[in-house]
Amino acid sequence: MTTALHGSTTGLVFLGAYEQILEKEYGKERATALTEMVMQSVAQAHAKMIKEESGLQEFDLVFLHAIIPGLLYENMGIEFSAVEQTANTIVYNVGRCPVYESSVLLGFEPTAIESRCRATGLKYLEAVLKELNPKASVELDSFRSSPSEPCQESFVISQ
Image (cartoon, rainbow, N blue to C red):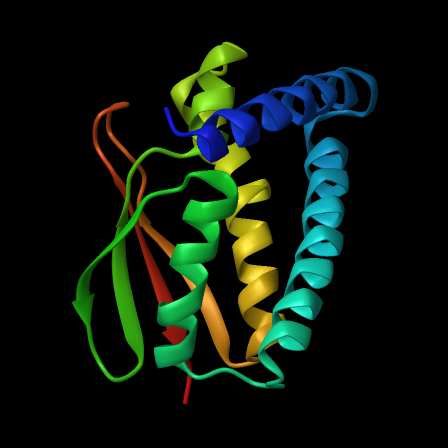
């Protein structure tokens, strides 16, 4: 496990434990909504840093592909590997992931792990992409069928 993956997994264990308490206190729907709000806020701050460091205000698909997977690996240990590219879409296999790793450590069931992924990792990534390019989005094409299998996600720029 890389240092970034280990650190991110540890942090997400704390977040996951907090999410479990929120769910017990307020119900799943409210807990998910609160988690999504946190991810949105964090993403906005990270996108602002990217804009300031690059000097750009809007990013095309080529730039998003050049910067986002590397940042996510460097900062969180998430492994992205491009498997297909068109003019408007890049499809990635996503290997080891701290959201998945922390969810397993907390004893989440597979369907709960996918729900957590959608509320945390994907919500964060979607918000970062939207801040960098309002036409950008991320799609979870397929969720991993086992710990050793990748997820498949797509970065999309709508026309």
